[in-house]
Image 1: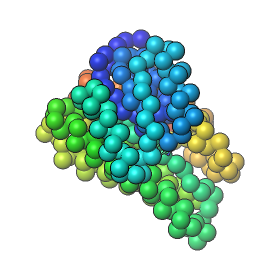
Image 2 (image 1 turned 60 degrees about the horizontal axis):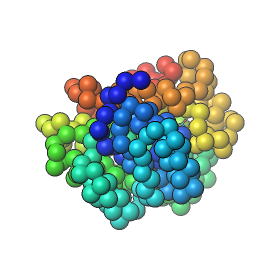
Image 3 (image 1 turned 180 degrees about the vertical axis):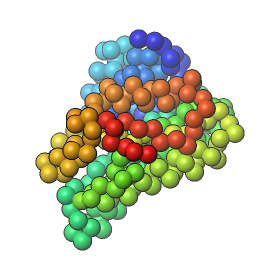
Image 4 (image 1 turned 60 degrees about the vertical axis):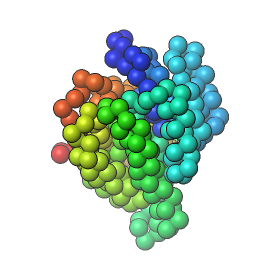
Length: 251
Ligand SMILES: NC(=O)c1ccc[n+]([C@@H]2O[C@H](COP(=O)([O-])OP(=O)(O)OC[C@H]3O[C@@H](n4cnc5c(N)ncnc54)[C@H](O)[C@@H]3O)[C@@H](O)[C@H]2O)c1
């Protein structure tokens, strides 16, 4: 494996599991030093131990990205430890209710999804960029979803907040386009992770049927494209929403 990320300092949110964990692992194996943010203490400890056994330099930070003080404190701690931040991959997110029409969708559920998927993305992006502004260089990848591009019925909280992430990517990228900081997004179709373990069979069948390759994606496939997106060689793309959908996306 090449060492594209030697001496890079990378924050990965939601890095204790699923897509975030796979991206963190690949970044780490390619030389990055990892700051893994997650709210699941047990999973976080387990993942950090696994990473260390694999020869990866990684520290876990117990952070709920929907709380400003926690995000601010953790980003500052990473900066104090490593003196800069080169990469952010924001993968923390929740799906919320599925197979539920808006008329049955509770406001409390909508608020919770918003707090994590959109406000949390805003917070981690804001504080990471405050650190990156000092060096004028960096790579941000915010994980959105096909649901944000197309709108999945029965999951409007998720679809709406993931569409919000796309708007955030496009706006923020332009604010920093004249620096060496790029901000891009990624919209996966269904990827086999814990996130969709509880997704109703009906909802999952709806989403898989829409994928021309007729299969779920893997976290390793998401890690491969994510690592390219945050690599130095990806230097003339910003504000772009990359695809990993087995042919589902048509734009
Ligand atoms: N799995 C899919 O099919 C799929 C498809 C499209 C997009 N996505 C997106 O990819 C990202 C990762 O999904 P996944 O499938 O790996 O999920 P996952 O549930 O396997 O992992 C998510 C991780 O994020 C952590 N997390 C959740 N809320 C958090 C918070 N507030 N603060 C910090 N950490 C938090 C969890 O503890 C967990 O470790 C999400 O943003 C999701 O919306 C997933």
